[in-house]
Structures are given as structure tokens and as C-alpha cells.
Length: 406
Image (cartoon, rainbow, N blue to C red):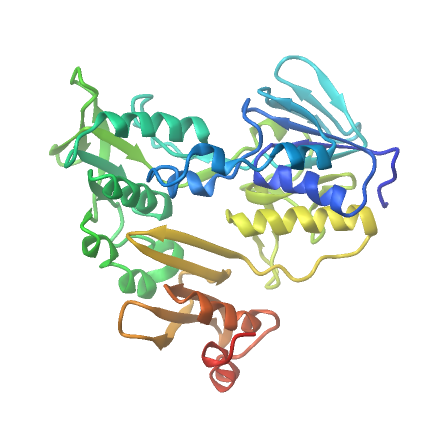
């Protein structure tokens, strides 16, 4: 049923996905009431720059603000910030808040995102980078350190690599402690992780793999810590940052009746129930191969918001979603289009020989994704390979990565 001016949409989660949903509802002409609930007291802001430009000292935190005064005026949104949601009544489309209040609407959007995954040994003295408070705290610690001081980064994935890059830019000495054989193995696969394995050392960052960290010991008065390994050895560090993935914020929905399976399970229109949608990192949505996936990417959050707003305001379905993400690490830009599996085949189709290349993933002969290192133009030119099922043979024949700018 299409929204009318009498409807009231309650959006739970004031991150990118939640804020974009508000903006997209207004962009599609919704004139009813919109309430945005967020557990942080901050106005909606962009998170990816926190581990990139902000941590490196290139941006002030104000540059991450999404809800500028002008955008707030256009959004005409009621803000409920600094208070989290504790329960969702699907039938009544009402949200109970931590302070005891209940906000009732006609439609609810779940955009509660994810939080940093914590290992069993994590302590409050350790650092993570998931929100603005985390970034401010880590920047304050970095500001206390001197050139060459050791920063231990537990986890060599995207967040870990970005934190290590920022630390190196500040003149600190990051040591990345990766549990696997190589960083990004489980995300990009064995072949691409091998292509990327020299990025850290080439940038002057020490990378240690197959590291079994079992704890941190803050025995020193100046905030230093010993990172403790399973074999009993230690690494003395002036700062320990943990970046080992994320988990969806769905606990408040456990008695809601929605289907929860590593996120909120939704249909092709982002709906978990007739008048309840879920968008962004928290949504587990159908993929063309029949599976359900949850994708923690900036672009997916934006696309989900637009798709749900369009469906609720016009009844129309959105275009096919093509996931996209990027990571700035060790002085390079990694970009990925599509949703390739780590087990997919992959081959380089464009390589300058100077650390710039494009790879094409395929699954059972069909193109499943693209990965680029410092090749943004070639990646953009190749997007058409994912707009409809394309065989690897057809991809070679078309060779769009070598064509003119579209």
C-alpha cells in the first residue's frame, strides 16, 4: 500500500541507512510524519571516513556530518537521538525506547546497522573504530604518542588495514596481527589476497600472519599494553586497536516475530513484514542465486534506502542492486563491484605492471564480481558485466575495461 500524508514512518537507526531513508522518502514526495531514532546523541554522520580521513588527521569530524542544517530543513524529520530502541511491536508498528516511551507509527524501518565484533578477551582499555566516540577516543590516544611508537592492530581486514594506514601516516609504527594466512582471504579469496599481500610491507607497515592473540595486559601506568599470544609470547604496544568484523544489532527484535538470521530477513522490497522494512547492514536480503545475503557496504545501505522509499511511495520496484565498496589502505584504493564468493575463480584482465590491475571473478562461468587496485576507470567501464548475467567468454569478447569512457 502506497504511503499517504496521514502515514507516520518511524526509522530506527540514525546512521547512513536510516538517514538516507528519511531523505529518499522526502525525495519521492512523502508528505507525512517521519521520526528518526538513534542511540547516539550525534546527528547522523558518515562512518567510512572515520577509519580513513578522520583518523589520519586529514578531515575534521565535522566533515562526516550527513544531517547538515540545510538537509535537516528539507527532511522535516522529528529527531529522537541519544536513546536506543528496546522493542518492536510489529502489529502496532510501534517502537519502545530505552527511556520507557513508545513511539507509534504506521510503518517502521529498521536501520540499526552493526557493531564491532568483540573477541572473548576484549577489554574496555582496548580500542575499536565503529562510531564517532570510538574515533575521538583513538585520536586522543594517537595524539599522546610519539613518532615510532608501536600501535598493535589486531585484525588485518579492511578496518584493521585502514587504521594501520592512518597510524603510519601519523608517523607511528603499526604492527598488524592477522590470524589467517593472509589478510582478506575470507573476503576476497586466496588468489586476490595473494595479489594484495605486499601492500602493507611496501607501505612500511609490519604485517604478521597466523597470529593467535589471546589477550591484552594493561600493566603499565602510561596506558601501554602487552599483547599476549597463545604461545606465551608478548608484544609491547602503546595502543591496541581491535578490528575483527561486525555483528548486526538485532537483539532488540528477538521477540518481535520477525525472521532473524544473521540480520533481519527481508524480501525483494526490503520488507520483513507488511509495514516493516529493514535496510543497510542489518538487512539480510535475497540474492539472484536464491540465497540470502547481508552486505556491510556504504553503497548497499544507500541503495536499500532508495529501494524501500520508492516501493512505499510509488509501489515500484528498484533496479537490480550491484554492491560496491572500496577501501583506502597502505596508500592504495581497493574497489569491488558485485558480490563474489571467496571460492570464485578470478583472473586479471588488465594489469599495468605498476601495481594497478583489474580482476574479474566468475562462478560456473558467469561473471560474479570485479576487483580493482588503483583502477577506478576500468572498474567503472566494466560495471555492465554485472547488470545482467554475463559469461566470462562474453566478458573477454566485449572487453569493456579497455573501452572509451561511457
